[in-house]
Amino acid sequence: MNLITSRDNPLLKAIRRLAQDPSAYRKQGQFWLEGDHLCRAALVRGLQPTHVLMAESFWAEQGGDWTQAGAQMCVVPDALFATLSALESPARMGFVVASAAQAAVMPDAPTVVLDRLQDAGNVGAILRCASAFGYRQVLALQGTAALWSHKVLRAGMGAHFGLHLVENLSETDLDQLKIPLLVTCVHEGPYLHELLSRRELPNRCAWVMGHEGQGVRESLMHKATLKVRIAQPGGEESLNVATAAAICLHASATAGL
Image: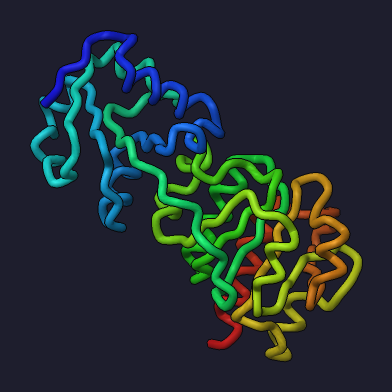
């Protein structure tokens, strides 16, 4: 066990950057997981941290439970540990994990495409939906919030670790996909519930989820195999993108049942 008491310790300075700068993980080749829930989810999926950091109070209570992580154990005074957090209520432990190399696009995997989504909460929520409904690949086009940023990791609640994630892609990279490309559209295409009732909704496809304000870019709308509308009897003009994703992914996942 390594006791760290200096605010200027290089490891602590690196963690602060990871917690505060959404793109820091790309430069540092590692990311920061804060909280026992995320850390346990990572271990269950086989991720191996390089460092386990604990506040002194957490080490005294539960330190022995984390020896299976197989990493350098670092203990930090509680007040100093709080300086590592970007949360209103800081957790008392976390992992530093080395980033994997950029993965290749899987042409035939059920996929979610993120087109310039900006909100970390929306991105994390969609990752959770993808994992829950069997969409094992998520492709993020350039301009989308950084998938392994601290805020997206928190919003994803562990979904990252069961998904095949590829980010910073260009639109032409989607040409590798060998499955239908589906988009939601406010004014064009059949309604989702109609496709379900006629059993015409593919359950092996790529759903494109677009920018919160601008929606899916026009060039991708033209490439789409199918444009789909979501019925909104209450009369709202549009849905939050994470809500729309949950509706569409669940519909496709259950289409063949």
